[in-house]
Length: 272
Image (tube, rainbow, N blue to C red; front, side):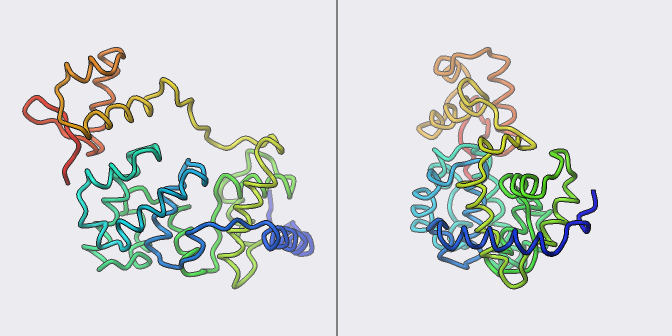
């Protein structure tokens, strides 16, 4: 597919449609009231595969507890994990904490400078790196998440197997200069509120697995047990009724991710 074949007139109509929707129905979200790169980075970590409605209270409580990235970097991982519990995908808490420490130690707390080297920052890929630059600095760059992908596919009648490169090229082509922050907020809201996956029947590239009975659910149970006290394997097996080999695999993964440690016959939350 050649994105350059899409006319400037069609793109202009599309821009007006999205921005008009945003001016009338844009959401009032706390991370949209700041340009602090740390707070933008925090919101992007929290919003990964988590509904906006669930994130709001966690975000507000978090920035009250750790209002700067330097304060987060000096916090214990146990406190960070405790504050994260309920958001799901708890390895993100580990990535966020590690990233904060790297930004403070290697970049003197300068989030935007660190983002230029995002490949060295845990948990930050192409989308998140660009999103921080867009929402914190209003840079004229485009990014594509699940909502934005669905919007472009639907509005421009694109094949669902379109390549990431073509989508990013089109997203950059459609970006109104000087309006990157508002434009991407508008796209997010249009995709979440108006052009939903249910309405379009456009499936995401990856789907979230069922939570009930999943490894994610087991990990959450394990972390809640270990936040109260270090425990041996026998104790964990008594509280988590799953196949021992599966439990061992999950625990091994959590150790590798440095979420928990194993020492002197007991598992516990990583202290650093």
